[in-house]
Length: 173
Image (cartoon, rainbow, N blue to C red):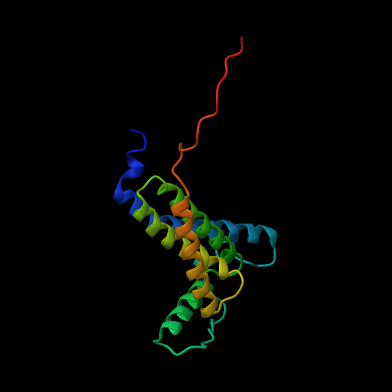
């Protein structure tokens, strides 16, 4: 009965859509404060989310606006300008951790559901992981494809908890 709430489809869908972004925002804020403490006295802001930038952010466009590559590049540029400084690293940690937590919440679902969630969370993990290496659209797509495949394999092979064989128990005489 205690796991009935975690099997509710509304809760599971909400966790898939909300948990990674909420943890990304939270960990970004935590990492922003850590960066502020590390650089105390230099004038860096403890809450960069709420600051007005001191300069105009100029993004570089390599792809034509309106194309798929252009939209991917716009998403990357939005992310890089929203999560500035250390908050970008912290938000990445939070986003990846949130996706892994969602995978764990879905581990007892049926195989088709686990596969779909594995693809979705794998794509989240893959895309955010490659953004730690570079901010190019082709790299983003490679991370999305590789993450989706690895996430689906992980959720297909991984079994629900409690499926392991029990250890033999011997009485001591």
